[in-house]
Structure formats: structure tokens, C-alpha cells
Length: 141
Image (tube, rainbow, N blue to C red; front, side, top):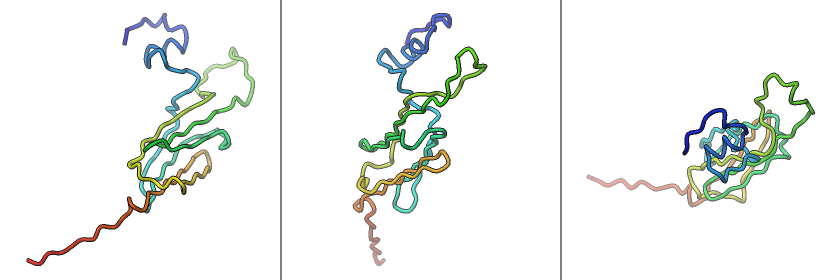
């Protein structure tokens, strides 16, 4: 990565291209604010993903290998002139988040997603083969 002077960063495109490489698409944000908790509950992999202020109909969930891919778009709700802003931190536009799952042995026919109070909860059941109980044999001494 080449070092650049701050005054050369006249656009977000230049900053992202210098950091991520020339093929970075600034129109799809990698969603650093879509924080996620991934945990096991019973025989399911659970993913709680923060997507505040995003309409659930603007979110799409797919499974790609052992990754949960969440994409969507945060809509611009009101028109405010750029010169009227004092501070602008909420990112609008398309976003994408890949969340690694601890296994690729999932029952993708029974995945469920529920949106409540800005949190998208995805339930990914493991396949029966993955949940197979192992019998313990006891040897006599």
C-alpha cells in the first residue's frame, strides 16, 4: 500500500481505493455498523445482527458455504441539504455483511429470520448428521 498525503484524499473513492485496492466498490458499504452476535442455542446456530433504521423488506439473507450473507439498503428518508449538516455519521445506501458460521453442515431448508426492534435474528439449524449423538463405551478394568 502506498502512503498518501491527507490533502490527496479529495474523495471517499480515493481513500477506499488506497486502503482496499482499486476494485473496491464504494457504493456497497461493508457494513461495519452491522454488529453481530453468533452463538449456539440447542441445535441451532443463532445470529443476532444489528440493523437499526433499516426496513426488513430492504434486507436479504443468503447462505454461501459456511457464511451467512446479509445485504440490504438503508433508504434516505428525508432530503436535507448537505450544507445544513453539522455532522453526518449515518451511512445511507447499500450494505453487505458476511458472517462466518462455525460449520457448513446446516439445514438450509429450515432457516428462519425474525426482525424485532432493529435486530435481525437468524436461526440456522444444523443438519441431523451434525447433531448425531456419540455413544460412550465403558471398558472394564
